[in-house]
Length: 86
Image (cartoon, rainbow, N blue to C red; front, side, top):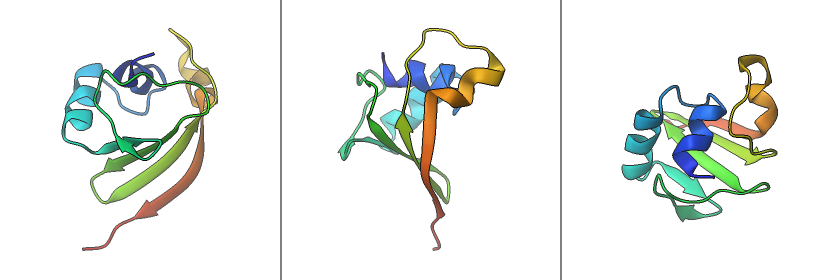
């Protein structure tokens, strides 16, 4: 599954176009490598996502094409959440 689609389906990012913009800015790292929106992700991959000052590290547990809002958080596990200081 494409990275931008996973971020939208898992509701980590609300819109796929926004997920694409964030990936193209180099703010998403998959398994230690800077990822593009079209990067394929699989179960077990670790993502590091930068939201402004917040760094979120997650592990992908499931991949589904569609999922209900209540079940979206079942697709990933939050490993670490930290805040950068300037």
